[in-house]
Image 1 (tube, rainbow, N blue to C red):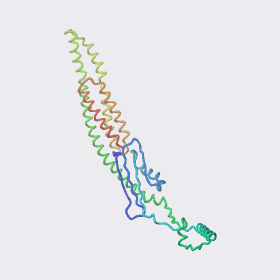
Image 2 (cartoon, one colour):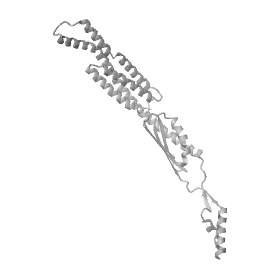
Image 3 (tube, rainbow, N blue to C red):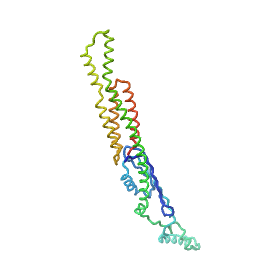
Image 4 (tube, rainbow, N blue to C red):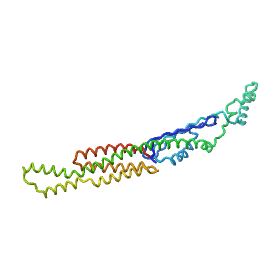
Amino acid sequence: MVKSMTSFGRSSSEEGQKRIFTVEMKSVNNRYLDINIRMPKALISLEEEVRKMISSSLSRGKVDVFINLKKYSQNEGTPKVDLKLAEDYLNCLKQIEENFGVKNDVSVMQLARFPEVITMVQEEEKIEEIFEELKPLISKSIEMMISMRITEGEKLKDDILDKITIIESLVKEIEKVADTVPKAYKIKLEERLSELLSGADVDQNRLATEVCIFADKATVDEEITRLGSHISQIRKTLSLDEPIGRKLDFIIQEMNRETNTIGSKSSDIHMTNLVIDIKNLIEKIREQVQNIE
């Protein structure tokens, strides 16, 4: 199954819960799997777990992950009194009373208002509990990304197969032209020699030797055979249910190499134009392959 590396996934917690998470993921093509995670500092210890979940489902692409958290329990907590601090405050007030002869009329309410005498202690959250809430949201986002990758990948696959079919027909056309090149070269060589020799007889043995040498240098049979093999490999690879991007990239490079060789051997303008058309299609396929996982 062909998968694209361009995708997006999003999920969020249901309203009414104590913690509301929003998870967003987006990915673009990349040579390797590159995961960048942005999350609140309070959740930073979960980064490695999130990374493992993503890497177990995706093999390539630059993946940006955004995790947001809204808490609706900021006012929750348990009040705690610091009796030692309250005692110190009372001792200070007593010293003021004794030294200045003023009335010490402090009440419990007033004493409780002194800084840090009574504080709200937030209940420490369990990170394991938080991860259990976050985990299904991450899974849902990943599933959405994979679904989008498959949809885009199938479109890429169909388009690449169409282009491969066109290339295959162009290669067959080159094969037909290549068969006529030595004969055309022989005719041109005979005409040229006749002009130069002013109608004198041409040494047919010498002419045959020159044509054989040219035909040997201009033959593209091996390149055509290898191109046919590469075309079959691409079709086979596109049917695999595994990451195939790197393999396709290598095959396309080899196809381009064989096409360049044919072009360098070509002395026929029609064959040269066919090579240009093939190179143009190969380049378009190469750009598409860059986005396949």
